[in-house]
Length: 414
Image 1 (cartoon, helix red, strand yellow):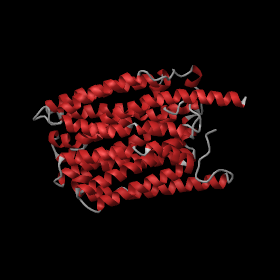
Image 2 (cartoon, helix red, strand yellow):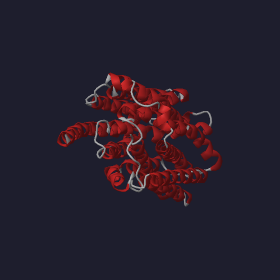
Image 3 (spheres, helix red, strand yellow):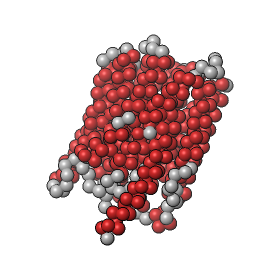
Image 4 (cartoon, helix red, strand yellow):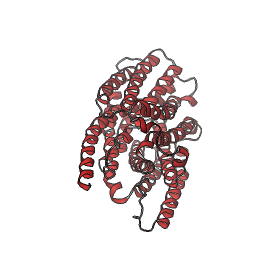
């Protein structure tokens, strides 16, 4: 029996690895699309908006789309399978590019915000790539599968900002109009990639199985995992969203901004090549804690100066911190549910993360405009302290309740 189980796990992991390759490629292309929005959204917003206060609203609308798309993504995946959700998402990504280009050409702030909202819906679907990578994988391979898919974002860090750099002036005087048209083409390529993923539709028994959602999400393990994700991602988004506009306000060039965003995205996803191995060795809670501390360190760098080097260092350290904290938190979520519960639990987790991002994102423009770049960085510290405190408390309670368990690790879900 043991040999049969081992053989089944090996076969399942082989199928998972094939999916991971496609998901990593899709992650790279989707990340390139979001990089276009983050690199240009505040600048285009400042140009089209009726007031400077609304400059970051397009990026806030992207985040609203992320929040709004998480639960529907889970519902589509649960009903029709992951692949149907992925194809729907890439279709929305294509519309994002086409509408964004049209909005810039016609000077419509409202249409540009709608385009970035659609981009957020696409991003919400793409956020499920990391969880999809673990479907059917053995317990030992799950963190690595999540990590390797996230590693696809390294290429997004190169492709996205370079795409903006190469195309931003093609249709002068309409800055970035052609960039969004190319973004639509990139989303179409991603559609072809995700269409070949081997993920069968859920079995009828899986549509109604599992524990009630409330029972799952009130577990201390889930609360700690979700809270750390809620802290890690919105804080990273707050600083990253404000950085390009802050750099412009400090007299730095668009090229400086593109360079900073490029290396920020590389730093976000580059550690993914080994984050899974670190989680397997040290436990997810310790990696999450390290990531939150790095995000606080990035804010400290941001407070220390206003040169291009300070902005770049802030964005790079911020990206590494996000990688550790968010992938670690995602690995913790995977330990809180059964296979038949995965879609609803994962979608709910992402709804919490991106819902909080949406709330915080709307304040980023006002925070920067009214109080400056220093205030943006100061906001980082209290949530990080809260996350570390809750993570430590839950880990301590678990060690006390189960002294035989390994220190710093959560038990597998039962």
